[in-house]
Length: 69
Image (cartoon, rainbow, N blue to C red; front, side, top):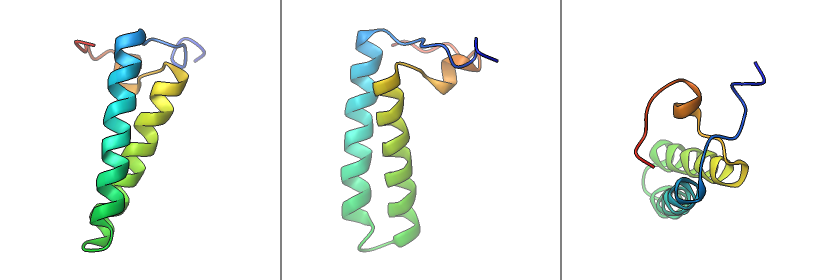
């Protein structure tokens, strides 16, 4: 199981997930005033992407999915 949680992102992947997470977080904060459930989904996705960026770990890569970055 420790192999699953091993960091698997390089610098460019971490930057991409950080930017994506930030954009999702901002979108979620804006959208939550109009559609609560959609805003919460964006906020949770943004926070998870920021976590991936900070930890250097990607759940898709850990599951064996090949990503470009």
